[in-house]
Length: 289
Image (tube, rainbow, N blue to C red; front, side):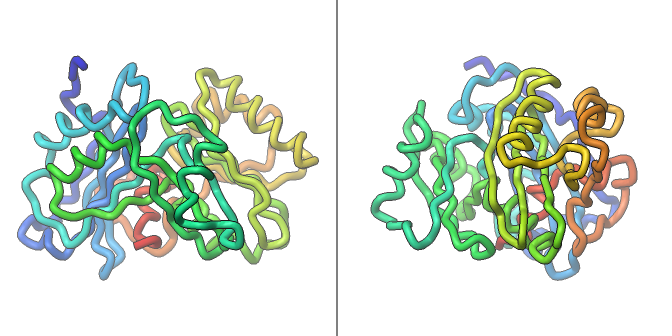
């Protein structure tokens, strides 16, 4: 594969960040088919010190992301530092959700193969989400695991669905209204519905056009008999109010609110130009560690 990654498309590093204290910080990484993000957090002080985002252009599969990530990371601000912990979020469509009452560890691969077709050699992992009493079973490309072991001596894997569900249920489990939540990140849309204190729907969709996002959103509304004119629609992730996706969504769903990425952590400084709903998963991964 030809590697052509030079600079991140977004980089914010706080002037107060002290490399000498890196052993007290957590590094959180999100890797998907077409992008990667890194974030440094101080969990004890509930602070974020640095965030970067890089795009992988024309990448076909998440299994091909490791070489692209290594090229970026090895020359980045985040390299050559030791951290208290490293958490790596795997963002892809290769996952399934199984209620704990039906879950058997030895059958994890069978559960996953029943709902998705793997196109690469992979390790199968499971992540328990207590708020919905279910396991997220997800595939991690073997090549990606091997690449991460070469970079980090130790790390923890997390599925993007597990992080998103954990944080969303924590916020809205006591809400009396129906909530449709959308997480938008680099050509992938996650849709989640919470009703009567329970998650009743969760799925991910790859999209190519603005119209695709609206189609999938309205399809979920139609399937679950949700009135687009009445539903409480929450949006997070890498989407701006002036974007074509938001503008078209607003034609069909008027009750739209952006949700802050984390209500407990604080930005240390220099983040004023980044919308507060961006990087929802890497910021909220701190709740899962």
